[in-house]
Length: 305
Image 1 (cartoon, rainbow, N blue to C red):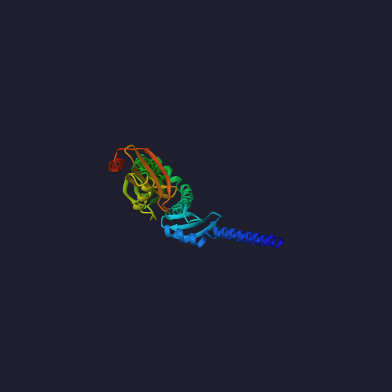
Image 2: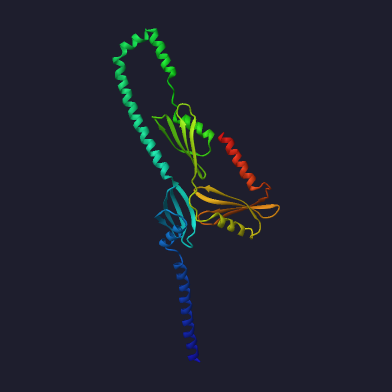
């Protein structure tokens, strides 16, 4: 009887040890399932082009800095599955350089003005006698008045900025004056476009305008975004419209689907990771996407005129 009891005790101890080893195996396997820093960087490089720089890490994610032609981005990557949690543009390289050049130019102009003021002060004391004689001569007074009236006045930077803000939507990221030609050159950033303007510094007239698309290269195509959006309504419905929109430095596909005769779904999809951010159900609008596009184009033409 004691022998059997001893055997049961031995068997119980062995079973307990085996369960302990299995539990440890499961725990360690879960820990090793997390991505390494190199794996996370490789996953990020597959979705976003640019020069990668590791910044920091936590128990849940890695943070990288990406330098692209459009600017510098900060990307947060999940340690669990390598998904892009956040991608935000921190700076625009081109514009930062232009603003720095503008500040240097303004500093040089300020020093030159101080030198000229000092020279003018010295010259004014020497020419005081001749100036008094000229003031006593009526013919000289008329000639001076004519020269003052004919001399054109250059618009200030603030005046040009206020004028352009009233005519264009977006943010003026650069403004520079060409002294030789009396032309202001401006850069306006608005959503996914960049507009370059040349403005006459004397009259304020816009003499040149060029707008270009600044949409970065996306990891998700429009066709893939459409497929993802249809999956949110179980594949039923008709795609009415697909648009790109930039929100806090991240590009999203906004896909509108006519799900039923009464309802439509608006699906917001991350253009870099393909993740569905939101699905909004609204009453169906019978206006077709082509009519909306034509209406928007007509409004833009009226604003430009």
